[in-house]
Length: 196
Image: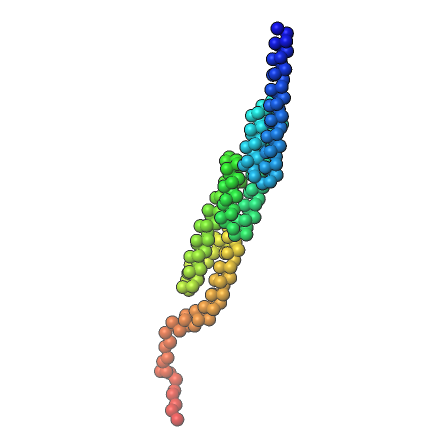
């Protein structure tokens, strides 16, 4: 009877030890995956390690910390891509960050910013067409909106320069048009006209 109890205790202790070893192995695999930039895989491994050893709170805390760091790294990379004009890459990185932590505000804000960038770029394209047609006064508000939006400021500055050059080219002819639109009245009633 004592042998049976001690055997059961030994089996239980061995199982707990093996479970702890398995959790450590899975945790190490997760850390390696995260270090290699495979955040989703690494976080899944850390979550698995936390389930294998629910008594070890440090694994759960590490999972939370690594999740936050992964989201931050992805958002920073996405912001860099967005600043370089690589909208598609930025969108992929923001979506990846959002997949890791759906409740995080920064990836959502980044995706909203990309959508706004696309809308402003469309307005800037319309403004460029207006400049080409000579509708300079109507193009300026669209360009000003692009200047106020950080993601499209470079394109807006280029469009503003194009608008200014078009305005300079049109300025002399515009003034002449205004001068020659006024009718000229030449009456010589009171002036003596001499013909020689």
